[in-house]
Amino acid sequence: MTLTLTDKGATAHSDKGARRIMMVNTLGSLADFDRLFLGFDRMKHELANHGTTGNYPRYNIIKGGEEQYRIEMDLAGWDKSQISIKQDDRTLTIEGKGRDNLANNEKFIFKGISSKNFRRVFTLGEYVKIKDASMEQGLLVVKLSIEVPDEEKPKFIDIN
Image (cartoon, rainbow, N blue to C red):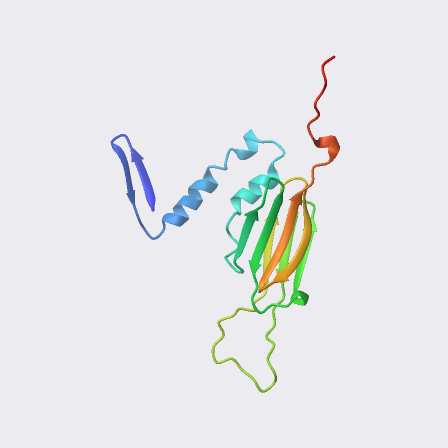
């Protein structure tokens, strides 16, 4: 869907390359980013590359309360030994090295459950830490929480 704005109003029309045009326009609007925001190189890189990793495996991000999050990743048929989870500063990386568990005399007639390798990278907010990870009914569940240090929390000062 492309939206065209003129002095006579707005019109919307669909074309095959609309998604690509919208992405180019978004990236073009980042041209002044370096000039306006100093020290935000990582953020610019993340904005420019957002959404370019594909859609496998599918996942949910759930917020529970003010300081709790949960990532649920659909990994039916995967074993926890095939999955690695790593937090490096503010980056959470979940990787899977798939393999088919077939006996020597077996072969697939139809393969609808994927076991291809994957890598998902999430950028975490400041003070977000991994609390727990588990496999539950074909879902990888990663629990996160925000842990703000006491010295960073707001302080209330009594007036004498």
